[in-house]
Image (cartoon, rainbow, N blue to C red; front, side, top):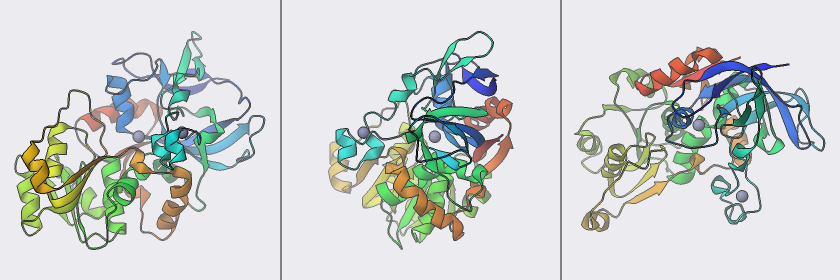
Length: 361
Ligand SMILES: [Zn+2]
Ligand SMILES: [Zn+2]
């Protein structure tokens, strides 16, 4: 029986909502009925070729749902269990995993080359965009791609944990390691940026500056913990320094992935400040620094992959924050849509409007 899915047939092709035939879960696999899936910037990056993975593919990688059936040998979950999808399962065996840096696992995206399903109309083989193919009513994934959903959290909220929240929270807690009383600037108020703002609040940051090109996101940002709001311009770094006693912030979190934003984020930090680059930019985005300023400012610029998160370790921590009310997942969602609303959600994202759009099944 076919299920509906959002399929990318080629880079730059429009997403198609079509029927797909999923295989029954083989050994080590799990079939999940999606409750919800977030529309992430990485899905857009796959459609426009900024990120490249095998196509045609079923996109979507931030989701949660209920286990329908399991293949041979699967013991960690059972039919009826609520699960969060993990698009970057770690192999446990490569040098990065051995160091405990599971977010850098060399094997994490190897599953994207596999055949995931077939188009119901013409039988074309489809790949899983980022392993988990969450833009579908149902998906079949390796058991390593599911984590138990936290108790007491609606699955429609839990979907966001799988990418936006692990990434934004992790950037603040694991990568930049924000301490109580520090000042933080978050660049880009989308799903990840909103999670980073909430994470800065949870970390006890004193001054939290949100920066976005759109003046319309101020309410959204302040609701997530921003104490200041700056509309991005050529004067952004100067404005941030003036908000922090001419010093600059202790920490900048860049959630955009553009050269100018990365440069501005770095310039917005104090001497010795830290910048975490979370946004995924293209190869055309060249960031330049001169040798003297690197020395003089003594700043740190770090790449940050999936929030430097270990999903198995971090989900229970996030669940604790949700249950205590410190982390509000609902506040990230600005639009609830159906599968066929994804192309419009991409347009909204490109126009720089809104937080997370959530496909609710
Ligand atoms: Zn994502
Ligand atoms: Zn590994």
